[in-house]
Every structure is written in C-alpha cells, then in structure tokens.
Image (cartoon, rainbow, N blue to C red; front, side):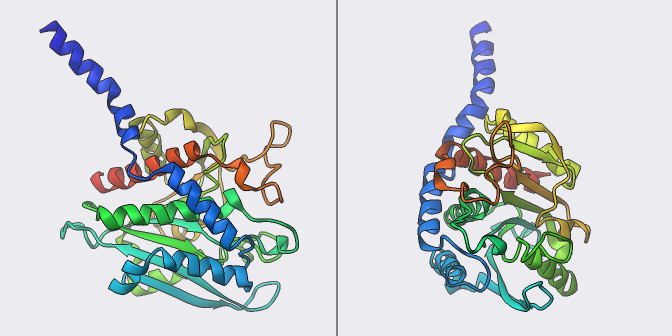
Length: 307
C-alpha cells in the first residue's frame, strides 16, 4: 500500500516533465524555420521586396489551408503614416475546432512578421523580433493541421505594420492590429474571441518571459500555470511592466489579451542592447528557448479552452 502511494506521488511529480518532453512542436524545428525565414527575407520592412518574400514564405507553408479557404489575406492601406500611404497585409490562418459546441469560439495566436522600417538602411534582420515568433506560428499551424483543435478554434494571425514607420506613438505603430480589431468589431468576429495571445521576442538564449501589465490578469495566471504544467516555470518571471504591443487594440475593445514577451534583450549593463539593432541575429536564439515557448503556447490553448 505504501509503495503504491509512493509510486502515485512520484508519477504526479513527474507529470510536468513528461508533458514537456512530449513536445507537440519541436523547438529545433522552429529554430530551423527561423533561419530559413531570415535567409529568404532578412529585411521585411513594409513596401520592400523582402516584405513580399516574407508573405510568400508564410503562404508556402499553408498551402493546404489556402486550398480549403482557411487562409485569409486582410489587405488594407495605411494612409496616414509619416512616410505616406502603405499597403499592408495581415495574414490569418484558421483551424476550426472538431467540437461543434466550441467551434464558434476562437483563440487567436499572433505575431508580427515585418521588420522595423526606420532600420531599413542597416543590417537589421529581426531574428528575435519578429522572425522566430513568425516561425513559431508556422510550426503551431503544422501541429494544428495534423491535430485539429478539440477545444476552441485556433486562428493564427501574422500581423503587419506592428513597428513604427518613424517614431513609436499611438498613431505610428500597430497598423495591422488596429485595422483588424476595428474590422472584426464591425463584422461581429470580436465577441467570439475568447483570448488573443501574442508572441513577441521569445527565442533569446537567456529568455525570461516578463509579466505584462497590459495583459488580462486571468490570462497571466494561465501563463504561470502553463509554465508549471510544462516544467518551464523557471522561464517565467513574476516581474514586469505594461507593454505596448499588438494586443492593445484588442484589449481596448474588450478582448481578453496576453502578451507573451521577453522585452529585456541585451546585457546586464544594457538590458535592451540587442533590441532594434544589427545585433538581433540568429546566434542570439536557441532551440531550448523556442521549445519552452512552443510548449507553453500549446498548453495555453488547452487551458483557455478548458476554462
């Protein structure tokens, strides 16, 4: 009887580690995808050939969804940027739930896919800032293609125009998410979104996911739980501050939001030394950090659907 009880306790303690080792999505595969993405489109600022190459790279990985009509190109013109009008495109990939009772409810997983426009004249590739999280969404899409959601439907959102065209402000940033939040508010999509979960800068070797003061508290609590569930609690900080990011336009319209971000990206002397510089390169990333991020995102989808 004592041995049976001990075995049960040990199995419960080992459960988070076993779940993390199951790895629905491979961090090494995400790192490889990131390298391919950066190779194809190192500069992806709006209006550039690289921006088109980035779009095509994403589309090439979702041909089955395009064939099914589950890939949406949300094209719009951002007219009032400091550099004049730009055509931008949000890319949306839909994975409907297999559960009819939950199919109309949506979890949006998002990341921006372009690079910073003001840095277009330097060798800025945004390996951590946009590339690795775009690759993460692609890998998550490959997983949900083979394992359709059984809870809420999952929509992947590659946002355009997250970065400022000149200097970050409420009017010069978040072009794609501001446009889409308004569009989905008008067409009735917004009330169906149970959670908007954003991935940003979560591939760094020294990643520590910060707590975001602009995220919905119950989603921050689920992030903490996901860290424990997957055996990755050490990668999630209890400290943070409010972050302005692609989740804000949705928060402002009443959608529960979560920004999964490590905004400290640099050295001890300068915690933002690599952010928006030529030092945001592939050597800063690791398969382990991307594994942690992938595990947490898969678990978050499960937790939100069960809530």
